[in-house]
Length: 472
Image 1 (cartoon, rainbow, N blue to C red):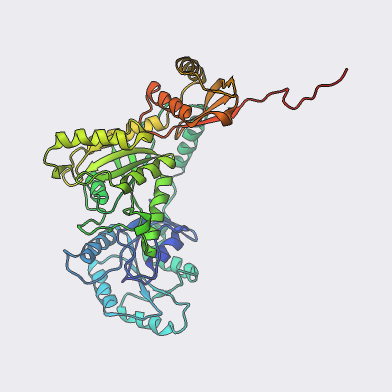
Image 2 (image 1 turned 90 degrees about the horizontal axis):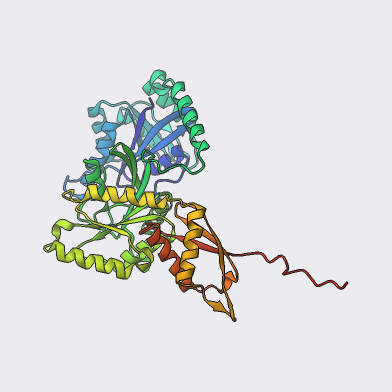
């Protein structure tokens, strides 16, 4: 069993930079602005020969519990209680502040193992701040440079010394590794496996600011795992959390609210939106959260279109349903608008929910699973070609320059999302309207509502095209 490490410290001492260094990826947003990180973000860290879970946290500040900073502090304290060891990061370049002393006292009261880390030790004049760190009474500080990767070996030794070799290097379960290898080999035998109900599912939650995305995930988890509040734009990083639903592992990604591009001017918000876009590309199913009190804003429609263009399976969630006075009338209106405003996602599943009360969450999860099944769907070539003959009889392809286009052969080339290839004559002359006709037919006849469907056309080769008549 591995161990867990939390990174804590006051704002702008380099906690997220150290987190990115340890996980080997730029997962956490980094900026010169203090207080960039707000939620606690876990990651799998590698430090020389150590493997452990690392948690990035918000900068600790003195503030009341009802304020945003106070709620951020509560998240950080939860990370400290969850961790086996705490990396207390101070800024050797700037020196100690009264907040550092307050945090040191808080860590001593908790009684958890602590490694004092003096970051930015490569800067000129950092010696004074390094020696001042001794006065915190948390042992000898470990000088590092998270940005440049200096001092990582010393940090590794300090972690091993604090935890002890037995805790830092747990025995590996070789039997478990063998079982994983065998199951993988067995899975490779079946070229087109049936839908796996037990496979972990990646779900991204996206939407406009203050639509209730973090509140929704907290309700799923049954705890205040993510920072929430009345302020718009609280979430900045895309935070992943795992939980089980009916025995299946669900990995959900909370993302920053996405405003219209013209309104995004600050560098930090641009980084947050870019992080949300990465979460969409990584996910399998994307839940677009609408505010049911003001649905179908232009930005809502653009987010849905973005998700579909990325090829993800999409589900609409009309949140804040507990604030609707006439649910039946509003639901009828939303269904009509969904069909009219989202023709490119005909049949997309939409569920009224309330992240505050938990209404509709079971139905939402079932719709997520059902949509993922369609997104993974495969159709045999024989069925597709019988279908292709039928749709051409009902609505033949148009004639171009007096010659009718012929659709000869059809097959599915991939799933996730479903993509089909049709061999035909004059592929470049086939109008877009006929492509839409085929896509709508596939969606209706093979029960594939709400997922993006790709249809590609390939001109069949003419063996006589480049052959010249030879004189005999």
